[in-house]
Amino acid sequence: MAARSKRASGPPENQTETQPQAATPGPAAPAGDGAAQAVADAELQHLKADMAALETRHTDVLNRLTRTQADFSNYRRRTETEARELVAYANQAFAFDVLRVADGLERAFASVPSELRGFAWLDGVALVHAQLRGVLDGQGVTPIPCKPGDALDPNVHQVVVSDSGDGPSVIAAELQRGYKMHERVLRPALVKAGPASAVPSAEPPPPSPAVTAADAAQAGTAGAAPPIKPSSP
Image 1 (cartoon, helix red, strand yellow):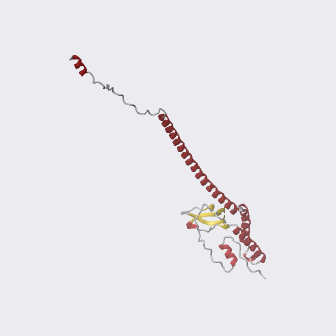
Image 2 (cartoon, helix red, strand yellow):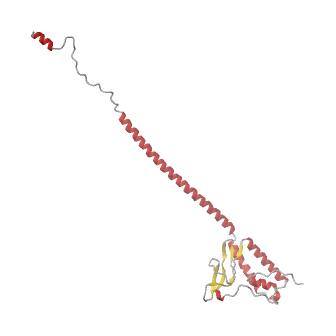
Image 3 (tube, rainbow, N blue to C red):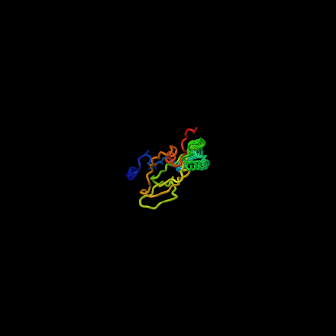
C-alpha cells in the first residue's frame, strides 16, 4: 500500500522531466559598425567644412575679380580722357606764346591814326592778323566774352584794378583780353572792377562822320584788327 502510494506520488513512467530553456539571444551587432559610422560622420563634417571654405574663397575671388574689372574700366576711361586732352591741349604752350603776338598786333592797330587807315600796307597787316586769328580759332583758342557791366567770374576774370563804391562790383573795363582753349582757360581776362552804378553803358557811342568804319569796328571789338578795305589808288 505504501509502495503504491509512493509510485503514485512520483512522476509517471515514460515521462521525461521538462527543464526550463533559456531565451536564445539574437544576432549581436558587429563591433565595427559604430566606429565606421563615426568615421563617416567625421568625413562628412570635414567635407562640409571644405565646401564652406571653397564657397568663401569663391566669393572672395569673385569680389576681387569684380573690383579688378571696375578698376580696369576706370583706368581705361581715365587713359582715354587723358589721351584726348593730350591731343586737344598739345599746343597750349605754343598758343599762349602766339597770343602775345596777337596782343601786339591789336595794340599796334589801336595806335594807328585814323588818317593812315587807308594805306594798302596796313590792309596787308590786317590780313596777317586775321590769318593769325584763324590759326588760333582752328586750335580751339577763342576770346573770353567780357564787356563793361558783366558780372565778375573769378574762373575767367582777374581783377587788377578796383574802384570803391556802393553796390556789387561788376566789370568796368577790359584791360587785356582773355582766351580759352576748348574748355580750359588759357589766359584769364584782366579787368577793372567797379560798382554797377558807376559803370557806363556797354553800348559804344555812335561814330561821328569823321570816324571811319574801321574805327567803329575797332571800338566795338576792344582793339580788334580793322577790316580790310580796298586799297587807295
